[in-house]
Image (cartoon, rainbow, N blue to C red; front, side, top):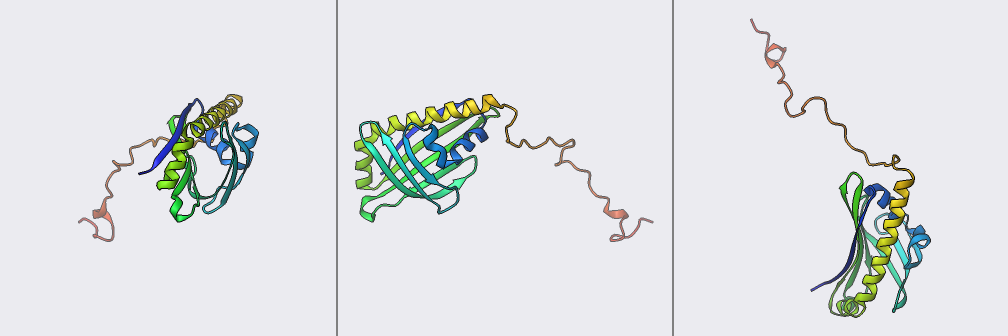
Length: 182
C-alpha cells in the first residue's frame, strides 16, 4: 500500500499564470520558502536536483528525473531508490476551476515498505513544508495576475457561427459522379 502526502491550495489566477511560475524550476528558490536550491528543465527524462529545507528535519536533497509532464496539467518527478527501498514520486498538479481560478496540488507518493516508513516518520514536517510552498505559489501567481490581468495566454476557442454538427448535405445527384438529372 502506498502513502500519499499532499497539500492542495486554491488560487485566484488563471492556470497559465500558475503554470508559468512552476515551470521555471530554477527560479523556485527566489520565492519558495522550502527550496534552497532547485535545478531542472521541463522535458521527459531531464534531471531535477532539489535542496529543500523542512522545519524539524533540516535540508533534504532530492535527485530525480521528469517522469511525466503535461503543460497546464502536471509535473511528476521520479526519485530513484534501491529496489528494496521502494519508490518515491514527487508531483505538482494543476486544475483550471474557471477562467480566472485554479487549484494546485503538491505531493509525494511513497510506495514500498521502507519508503512508506520514511513517509510516515516525516509526514507532518513534509506536509507543513508543502503548505508553505503552496501558499507562496498562490501569492506569487495572484500577484502576477493582478499586475497584468489581460496578459493571460489561455486560448479560448472561438464559438463557431454555425453549428458544425448540422451542416447541409452535399447534393451528390447533380455532380458528374452520379450523372446529371434528366
